[in-house]
Amino acid sequence: MSKALIIIDIQNDYFEGGNCELVNPMEASLKAKKVLEYFRKNNMPVFHVQHINIRKGATFFLPNTKGVEIHENVKPLKSEIIIEKNFPNSFLQTTLESELEKLDIKELVICGMMSHMCVDSTTRAAFDLGFDCTVIHDACTTKDLVFQDKKVNASDVHNSFMAALGSVFAKMVSVEEALK
Image (cartoon, rainbow, N blue to C red; front, side, top):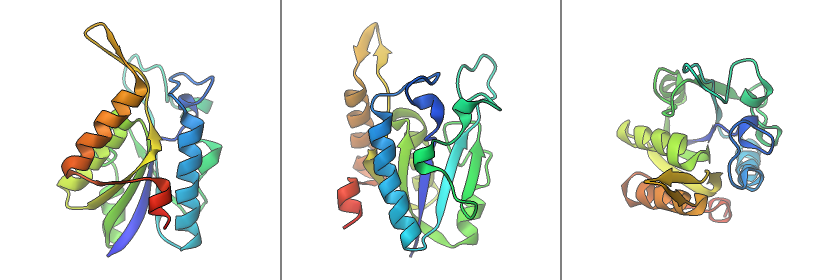
């Protein structure tokens, strides 16, 4: 079974000074970098997903801004495919599925940002398309949310979404476990 790495939306706007700062993005990106280096060292396919926000009134990932650029910690090589997307689901109206099919990829290793949005949407879509998914849970992060006027801490958001994905849609592993 061939395997590919999907790195979702590790982009500048999610880091300090960006237009949509997450909780601990540097830590998650450095863990994603370790997985990326492993895939490169072993000549395994890598796909970078870059969200370009074209939604009216969008405030981050705006076209032609520094914030939309993929962060330097996981900067793509010229040989690596960049999938541009406009929705949380990395498969929706993109070439991701056809690019994976070209390489006969059956197993996906997924990491990135945000746990509750694009990582969740992409993992569920991949599962629905028949891919065997593994999420590197500590190479993902998110932000605090509000529900019914109550703050939900980013760690609780992240853990809830990882628990839900891990129940059916994906195997959950840490970077350390993935690189064994």
